[in-house]
Image 1 (cartoon, rainbow, N blue to C red):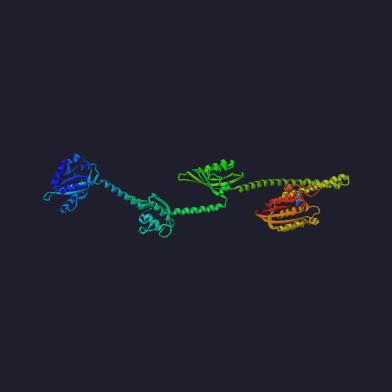
Image 2: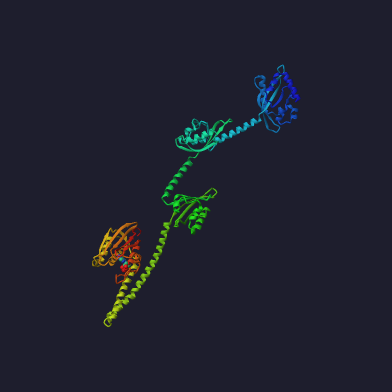
Length: 630
Ligand code: ADP
């Protein structure tokens, strides 16, 4: 160092400007390059340290800089010196790279001063070094980052743009040009306000203001742009703001995702859901959603109606559903849910629920299970509808079928017995007749009365058996036809001529239809009801029978009203029972088969029979004929 000091002092003495130069130079290392005799080169310790030498070693071999200077730079240094020698205005000012002892490059800003003898002959160059390695590295990094950003910007799947704080597009990528349909040039001539839907502009500008005021770090919003050809595009916009070192806003960075398709699907879905909700509104079908993960059950309005639960009396939990289930159906219904969630079985089941008023209702439930990409259940979507009516109908049909087979059995029994009874009865009648003929004179009056009473009884028995046989034959060999019930009535009146005449009975009819029916059976039905109406008349009263018909759902309803003795309410059902009579034979003739017969005829017409009556005033028999189902 003393040596260097000596040298410098010499140099300073020799040339005043050297001192000036050293004072002004922001030194990081200093050397002297001897142009005449290389062995006189010298290097200061600071520079030798920067180049990875231990202080001593490099000062021992000062010429070593000539070996470690980057060869290109050495050429530039020499040519710079040449230029300077020719024109001392030309500065010795360049960047020099040296090879560090660890192999890396060290960058210096180099500034040289040419030293001349008094004669003007150049003898050396005094050089100062400023280590700029760190700047160079940072610059490299920056340029790499910038390069990366440029690549990402240009090739992003998102629309990307730099936007001025006033809203002018400063830089746009290809994607955003595609989204809005403008070329880069066209878009750069516009502002984001120009292409934003007016209804979304205020919301956007409001966010922009907050961002500029440093109240938010960035924002995201769904908004609409106008495409160049006029149609609307929905985008998801994400905006951040770049600020300079003094936190002044520089520009916005906007990322834009086209969500038009998603919006359209959402809208379609909303429309479908609205339509579905509307369709379900009147249909009594309830819909429900069960969040499997959080055990939350959500019902729509119709569900509450189906379960008879007021909307506010439900906690929206799975347990609440369980609590409404009929205890006998609970296990099965739960199992069905579990199996559906496990993916083992579709949810399609029936169960009963108990309403708060304790009535029981049958429900049919259908559901789908939604799963995530791993197949785990997320939620169940389902419907419920009340099938109580259907269940009741099923039950009635089942009972009717059971009754029908019982009835058939009975008919068969009645048919066989009545048929078989006729044979021995005919024998009894024949022998009783023969006995009276042959021995009538030989027996006394008492004996004859006995025999005559037996003959009457057996004749009555024959009537009964014939009636029973007719009754049991009813459902066989019959044929549906279109019949005019007016004609049916006329023919009955004709047949009952004698009875009507003898009693002065008045029969009126209104509104009798032409309908589908079993003609013969319908006639017998009319006949029995009219006969009864006349037979059970009040003493000293002219019997009046009024017949009416009216159309009902599925067919016709008839009524036969008389002004006879009437029937007590407790006997309303009994009168339709076979052989059941309310009076004895001495009061009114009869077998007790008529109304049983009538009932059966009504039933084969799929109808019902019933009556209203006030004792002492009269009775009205009603029956229906369901022509539509015949
Ligand atoms: P029958 O007429 O042979 O006695 P039905 O089966 O026709 O048998 O009638 C059963 C019973 O119902 C009758 O015995 C009678 O007591 C009562 N009944 C039927 N029709 C009438 C009527 N129009 N008015 C009052 N009672 C009636």
